[in-house]
Length: 484
Image (cartoon, rainbow, N blue to C red; front, side):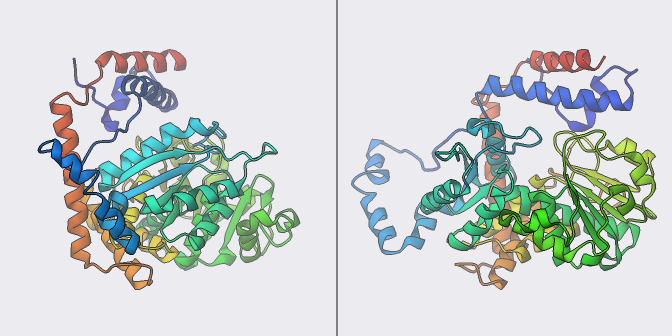
């Protein structure tokens, strides 16, 4: 077998030399999707369960199970917090979804989200040494509607087994009620990565982009294209980071958000959007192109492109415009097209383009920091602290228009992020236990190293088998044939 080279920087070299930039961009998406299908079928998913305690003879089952384990049960009975150190609860995350908004594919039915949730679990383990379980649930009620209360009840029931919960791919408006209710009523952190995670990493990218163009956040005009859970939370965190609400305009499918949007006001489920209606867009602008005239920043988290954001919109923006086109799996406008239209800095959610503003840079470190100090919740202050942690790490490496964010292979960034978040949790009064910053950093690095050493060992001994290079060739042929 030949080793499959999936280095993102080499993907372009796989395609015919006469392919245009647009053809390469389309082919990369098709190639990655097809290779995902083939590799997932080959492995049967991405996650398995392995013991962390050794077996030195069968009598050890009397220690790990009955009768010895009775002492663990009674100890935890008398002090529930002991569960964090006597079981794997302290390092265990539930990845919960009803699969109603999976990436750009919409409602994929409950089991349709398993690939994404397993991917989330894999990233947590590899990037931060966190154990996680994918839990895709059926949220339908007797009327055939998706009921947020069913997700709320499910999470409340499972929280004794987990140190934190990562909500994922829950459609709006249900996601607002689910997150806000569980954040207040659960005794462990409940984190909605599509909202808070996207918000945190986007703020990180924005911080460094503004540093590059030498602009201050309180002075800039920002237009948000899309007003779903992600952009609504990005806007909230951008405000907390110091932006001027009167210089912010958000758009949903019906136009600009402002005080006259009675359709939003009348629907109590959209209370997050209504809050933004009251704070932003005082001139009540309803046209995106008009709103973008002279704007410094465009943040789009809407529907997959590539023609959702129009080049002429970018041409009307201000000096050195910053464009975040973060729809997945295809950005609202390809970076080359945005640059041709005048964008100075372009970020997307894709790892095969510069400036990947992707949740994978945030949630592993954020959750690890929260877990290590046994936090009861993740506050907005913790999310903004994580944003500055990411931004400052990249700045030390030397930021420039094609490098505003750390990359996933910059391992120490996750440990710094975990440490900063843990310290903020202590400052916010939501931590059960206090550790030093150095303790959190070292523990995170140790857990990451152990995880990667284990995976390397399993690959070397063929416990994780290497796919045949024919999978790569088959996926490549499929992509090229579709684009030609």
